[in-house]
Image 1 (cartoon, rainbow, N blue to C red):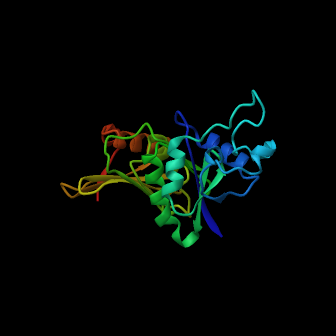
Image 2 (tube, helix red, strand yellow):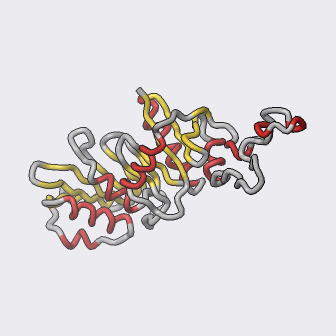
Image 3 (cartoon, rainbow, N blue to C red):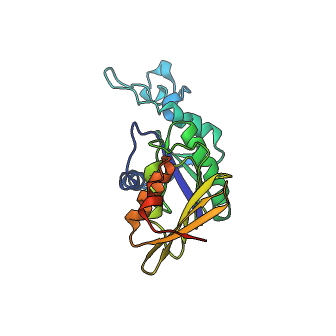
Length: 238
């Protein structure tokens, strides 16, 4: 059994639902190993001097007035060339598939490279999409989940979406700025446990909130450098 991540270009942030629809629409065919996309091939397929239309470079117009195939976004091409094991789902979409035991290790590399290349990344196992923006104010902030996901510099929508996936199989979500502070949450029978730690002062606080929205608001405020959630809830020193 394998773990998959799909990567492509979007001009603006997309929802997890939209990303899931895109991915499902592409799964009718199996990806092949990464290679120059079809529009970049120039090797003749037949004898051009014999007038064979199949001899034209793949992606070129075979008849007058027929448009050429669009080339993929350069970030997609760059990603495919730099990520070992990447394959093409389509000329514009790349798939990375690895064994489950390597999923956590490779996922972190895929998330980082996709962001560097200006691309979104969809995780079909979790039903989550990694957008490029909007992001928080801490460049080194990590999001960590109980099912093994580690993302450096997660976008705000991913944070909220990841919190909604907490379950017995994914028992916590945390945002961490190492050496400074962190916030984390776990589901409880009647709501959610919410914790905040000031690592500089070595002081940790805990509270209980009744609904997911309160947790999502706290995490968004934390990621954007605000601390209104500290005043909004009753905390106990741990």
